Length: 111
Image (cartoon, rainbow, N blue to C red; front, side, top):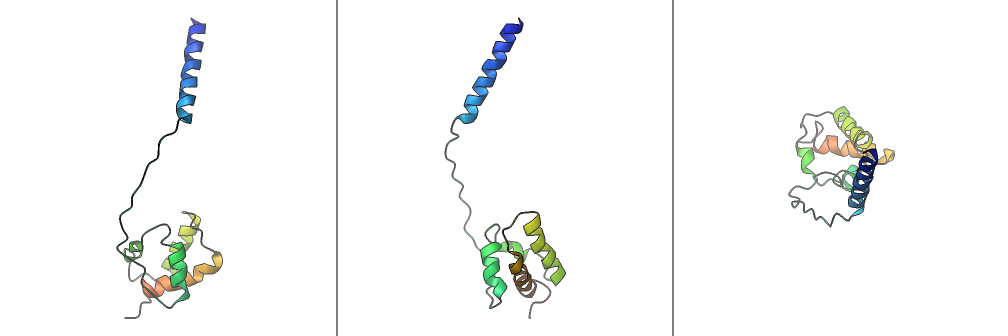
C-alpha cells in the first residue's frame, strides 16, 4: 500500500515537472496607443522625464496629480518611483525631473 502511494506521488511529481518545462506559447500584448504626451519644455528635466518616466507609465499619469502639488510632493513622487517601483533614474537626474514636474504640472506652473 505504501509503495503504491509512493509510486503515485513520484509519478505526479514527474508529470508536474514535465508540465513546468513545457513551452507556454507566445503571448502578444497590445497596448492602446498613447494619447497624451509630456508637456514640452526647455527645462533639462523634460528630456530626462521622457527617458525615465514614460518608459514605465503614460504621460497621462502626470495629469492625475494635483495642480496645487508643491515641489516636496513631486520630490517624494520621484523618490518613490525609484525606491518602490525601481525606476532606473540616476540620482543626479532627480532634481531636474522634480523641477520639470513642479513647474509643468504642479504648483509652480506659470499661468
